[in-house]
Image 1 (spheres, rainbow, N blue to C red):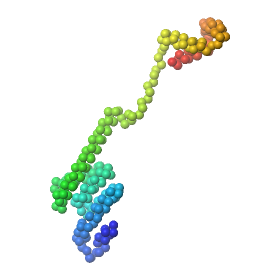
Image 2: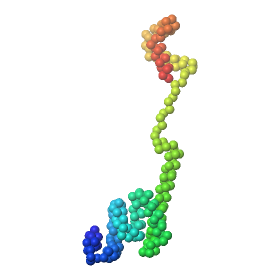
Image 3: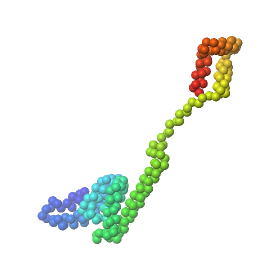
Image 4: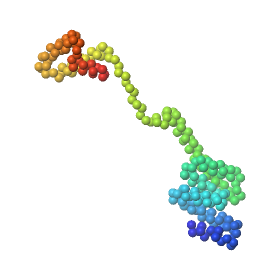
Length: 215
């Protein structure tokens, strides 16, 4: 930064011509700004590096190092739309390179353009595969668990009803004591008689019907 301030000839009005000021900037400021951009990029500050490269291109719009590094930095920042615009401009320059470019400069810019093309192509392929997978799987939220299907209750056949009643009766009888075993036939006969004569059902019969309805 001290070197840049020392090269600021705007305060020397009348002593330094505009042409001399431009020559000093191109010869001295551009290398310093380019080096600062590289340092900032290596330190993990790509946005600040891009600002330095823009300063270089204001002085020398055809500077090959600044153009190449700007394209690489924009890719690092995932600025893909501006990268496509910059890439088209660089390819146009490569068709008829500026007179200030050497063969090495043209090769460097061409290499950076090829790398950018490859990266953009890979990005496009990934986007297409992502979209394809979305439509094949049925949507963005296909990974969410599907609700469990509702099982409609099925009506029991006569055989199933008889088997269910027999199992319930056997389970009930297994819990009876000797005394209850003795009086059980009388209660069972009374229960059936009440159901036929009066149409009323005992609590045990109602409980059995409720269980069958739940199944």
